[in-house]
Amino acid sequence: MNATILGDGFPCKPASSVTSHDFFFDGLKNEGNAKNSLGSSVTKGNVMAFPGLNTQGISMNRIDIDIGGINPPHSHPRAAEIGVVIQGHVKVGLITTENLEYSRLMLPGQIYVVPRGLVHFQLNVGQDKAFIVSAFNSHMPRTYVDGVDLFCAKPFVPYDVLTKTFHSDQSVLDNIYKAFPDSKCSSFSSVG
Ligand code: GLV
Ligand code: MN
Image (tube, rainbow, N blue to C red; front, top):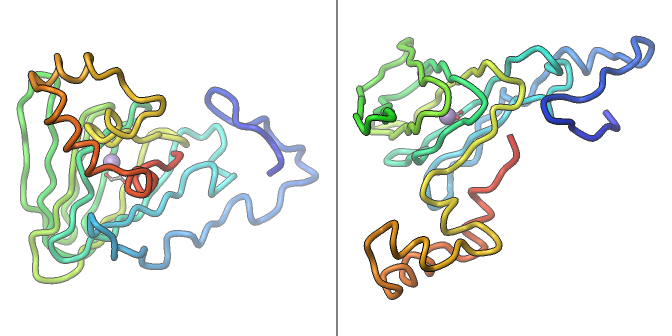
């Protein structure tokens, strides 16, 4: 699709240029590469990858988590998420706007829901790899990796914003910045 994304979608294609590629998508069939510092991989089946989703308000991801790995706390500003554990033992948790944490060990076949915009995570607590399929009520749910976004933002979030927010002095923040060089930040930043 040769189009630029608008606020919440692409312009529709003329019917004459629609192909089967627009309605079928193989992108979630292969295991993602979770050999990274988090031990996890999210493969996105959003409208960027799967054009037939345009304007439909739905999309789907595949999450692979290595033993001990985590899909770190993150949120989707545009969508609620429903997920099913296909393989593995996964601790799934979410945090409400009242700072209440709800988490549970989830086994294959069990499903969870994360209301729109809430922070959530998936931690592999089993002895095998884990595999989850998640779905969204947006064709482009977008993702914030919470906390990390404050240290990976460019230009940098002003120091006094961070020192006041975290009740910390600059040296504490410098240490956190060291943990997020550009090479690490780029592994967190992904559209969709
Ligand atoms: C899982 O939380 C995902 O965002 O796909
Ligand atoms: Mn999510």
